[in-house]
Length: 165
Ligand code: NI
Image (cartoon, rainbow, N blue to C red; front, top):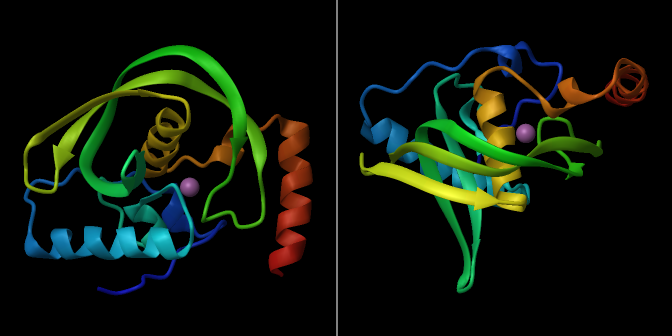
């Protein structure tokens, strides 16, 4: 296993449309294991392949189970249905140190393929639904800061860019 470097805003890779995965190779399996390790070390709720510099449709998500945390890799994930809305605070490993309240669907129905190639389907809400929406956005080159109002986005840019310079 290996810890991967997480790309941060404004790295252009974060704006790329990730490509669908056609075959689950050993390399993809290894990558998903490394992404889970990287996500956990960074204490994230999820991680998309774009964030480690590889624009393919692969995400990892931390599922908070009753018997402790269980992370999972999902290939070609898609949100099939959404229901109602909710505002909650959100952050991103690629935008370190910045948190903001974002409106998203409260409930989602997600479809994809697991790392063994089997169909993956889940209906979830709250924290997990938010994580899926956030990570799938990454695969489409979208970041949570894109949801900010123009005024808030300007404030963010000034603060954030000053910090990383
Ligand atoms: Ni993120």
